[in-house]
Length: 86
Image 1: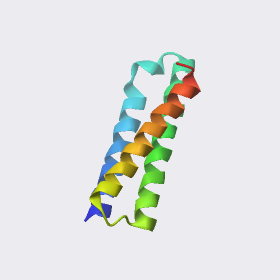
Image 2: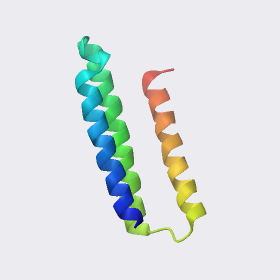
Image 3: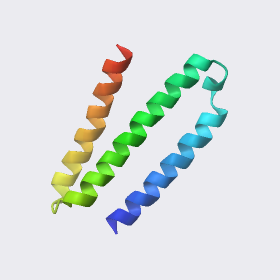
Image 4: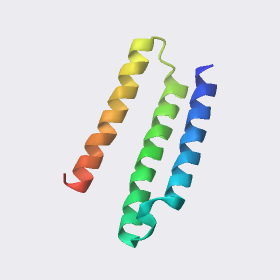
């Protein structure tokens, strides 16, 4: 059940990102559009990594799975902060 829900969530996120990328305010400035694309790519790769990890290792405990997902999200936030020097 969890893999199916994850796949639906990832598909929904991809659809949302594509839709927002087409109509967002960042389409006016090419530099902003590049920044948005890089940020979206980072989050998509983060979600792909998390899904692959969960599919391969299958944590048997909900607490461990939750800890891993929080760690991945926070790691991505740190990478974004370091990437944008903020």
